[in-house]
Image (cartoon, rainbow, N blue to C red):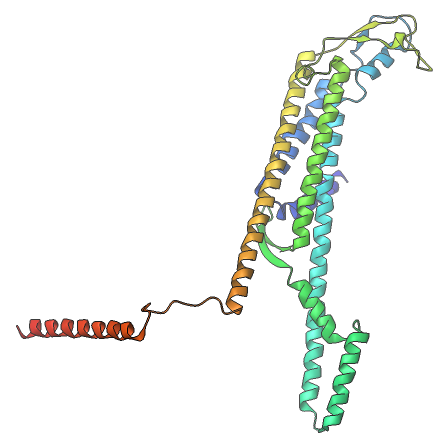
Length: 359
C-alpha cells in the first residue's frame, strides 16, 4: 500500500516537473533530498526521547508534562514535515490545472476535426447540387444565414468552428524532459493561462515559505524567551517554566512553585539540526525568488518581442516601410550618369582583359 502511494506521488511530480523551469527542478530537489529525508530519518533520532528525558525540579504530578508542552508545543521534525507537505500543495494544484487545460486542448482538437468534416461535407453538397437557384432565392438564403448567425450562435457550425480555432491559437506544444528512468521527452501543452497559473503558484509557494519561516522563528522565541532575530537561533540547556505564576489557567498542575527549572537533552545536536533546516529553508526561498524573476523576465521579453512584431506588421500594412532604391540619387540626370559610368567601367575592364589575352 505504501509503495502504491509513493508511485502515485512520483507520477504527480513527474508531470509537475514537465512544466517546471530549472529553478523549479532545483527547488524540488532541495525539498525532497535536503529537507524531507533529514526530517524523516534524522529528526526521530534527535527528538524521539525528548519528552521522556525532559526533567523538571518539582514533585507536583503533571507539572512536568505541562512545562514540556509550554516548552515544545510541537516537535520540530513533525513541524518541518507538515511545512514540506503544505509547500507541495501549490505545485500539485497547478498540475491539476495544467492537466485540465491539456484535456480542454485535446477536446477542442476533436471538435475542430468533427466540424471540419461537417463543414467540408456541407460545401461538397452545395458544390455538387444540380439545382439552379434564382437571384431572389439566393438573397433569401443569405438573409436566413445571417439571421441564424446572430440569433442561434451556439447552433451555427461556422460560428462554433471559429470559436474553437480562436481558442486553439493560444495553445503551443513543447518537448520537455520527464526526468524518469528512461530519460524520455514528453509533449507539453502551454497557453497564456497556464503560464499565469505557474507564476501564481510560485507566488503562493513563496508566501507559504515565508509563513513557515516565521513559524520556526516563533517556535524559537517560545523556547529561548527572546525576541531578537539574531538571538533566537539556539537551543537552551534549561528552561524556566513559569506556569505556577499564571492565574489565567483553569487547570494548573504547577501551583506549588511559581517557577520550575527543567533540563533539556542534547541541546548542541538539536542546535545544528535547527541551523541546517533553517539554512535549507532560506535556500528554498532564494530559489523560488530566482524562479519568479526568471519567469517574469522571460514573459516580459516575449511580450516586448510580440509588441515589436505587431508594430512592424502594422507599419508594413500601412505602406510606410519602403525599401531604399539604388542608386539613391535626387534626379534622373544623376541616375543616367550613374549607369553611364558603370557601363564605361565595364567596357574598360573588358578591353584590358582582351589585351592581356592577345599578349
